[in-house]
Image 1: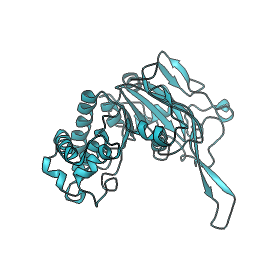
Image 2: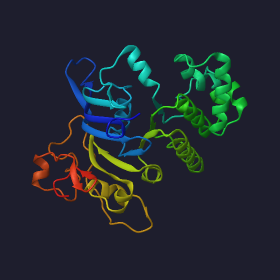
Image 3: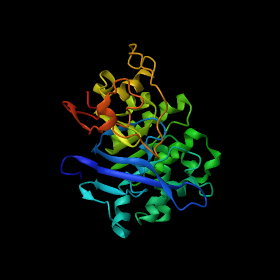
Image 4: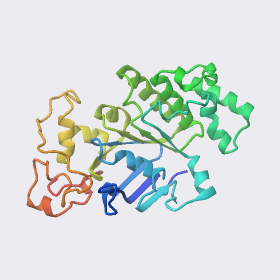
Length: 323
């Protein structure tokens, strides 16, 4: 079951701003421009990698996609259904098919619950199985993610970070979702453990046929996991390209600068690009192109007109006047 165009998730013109007060006694508020007009699609059974510097809005976009954070405006289509305004029982049924793997394997698990109860909570909430059957299903799922069956009787503090993330993955896939948002799932793990978790996620994707929206700041991880790569900067998408073309021939100046910062990614030295200045504040983003204050290709037009995300090459999108 997918949307009419083969997509699991389709985001259209999503905006999300967070109000902040100037001071404790002030009523006047500023607004953090977390997401400004983002449109993105995730095909069924595929992985879209969402990459960008810290604070660019990629985690917020992933949570908006699941409606863990409510958008200010825009449309969210899931399996062809508009879920932007769903509520109550309708939204609860939809949540069975969309799950998340959190970044922090420590704070994302309830320390007072046994692992078997954590993994089986979804079955219980949605009335899919009784307590005895849940125990058997939980043990089987823990074995599938590389843990022992007796882990079901233990508490999260008895496990390492990598093992806790395996528990989080088991919980996320317990209801056989169509979409999983993976929010920096390996960023807090050792490199050797990262490889194990990434390979586990790929194996599970093939087995269950689910789609991933994979959020990460690590381009090596994105390259390993993704068929399509989307780049965010200050709440806007800069480029969306198939992974092979993205890493072989980046279009947007910001994408080129990101790849230049990763030594020998792909086996050949890249052009040397040094960005000037600091990332502008998301409270007061610059007019025109968000990237123009640091861009080595910037011209007068970039300061005045925000470039739309448009097709810049067959199957590739970029938000730049001069691509």
